[in-house]
Image (cartoon, rainbow, N blue to C red; front, side, top):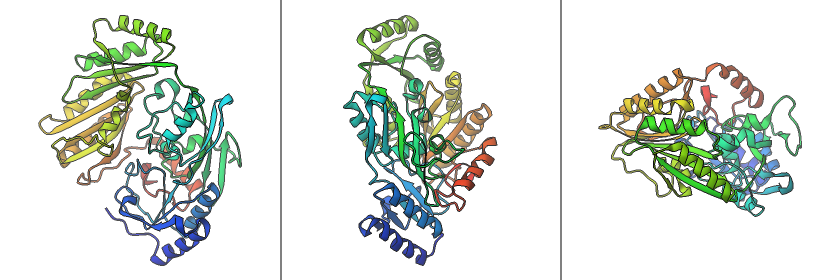
Length: 436
């Protein structure tokens, strides 16, 4: 897919010159094929070295009507709708500092371009962690994870990113560096910036730093797989565990079209505490078979992506789509039945990873028209039941499919916020809900 540049050649050239004056020519370069965002190529990539430089470059772009996409590690550039306008990428690749680790207070302040893995390794030196496990932590950056709200399986025990973040600084299109919570530089009265920025897909401002609450690293951990005979037993196992007094840190179901379902559970704590938890779980499960498994079981959702190194799925089908679904935790079995009914096994392959929080990931493989029809049907069913289906990535031969679905009553508020923060539509134009 290609989109004509909204700014003319002269405007792009002038933007490059102005950006050179801010970040030096070494950090402004013409875009390469690897810089394409959701099928749309930009003209230029700028890599500011400080928050102040980033804010200056963003203001220049805004004043010049240059359409911008913020980029961290680039692991989720295909998520959301293709941009309706794109001229420049502003990269946080040089904003990688861990600014302050107040280990005694269990907080950390970190720049947006720092990878999750780098941050976790630094925190581990003090036996602490940021309690999230996003996709591709070795490449995913703090800013990108926040923008896409990619929390992971630990959400069940420690809450989502909006529970973990306590402060944020954003560069706004008018050149303002606005902060809220944590170590405050400049407050924006009336707005909770950390929560607004989380999951906003970079449409309100560019995250430059964040402050998080931390948790101690567990002394020990136990990873178990519970084998289920069918979907109804899978549902029973999940509900029984959730309704028990077990102190599990994570719980997920893996349902492959070609294999029996499995449930994974994680316990963390002291050896004695984990042993007691295992005993209680054994009693609760009765005759269900259990076995210890590798910690890698919590990375299984990465296997849905062909972008994940070494995990490309050889399905034999020409078209693939990966979606994120939101359901009631009590409807896991019903949801999987809906998936099965929408996908004839002779024409489809599918795999799903469903967390006990009600958040899940589904990959469909099949013929283009059949995949499109199945996604439309599943979205209709899930939205009617109060859930949602968000298309994260799909093959180029799939017919146009809105990533977000029905926005509901929140859309007017979201548009008002967009108008307040980014009235010219400079940031991530058209990529978010309702074409924001």
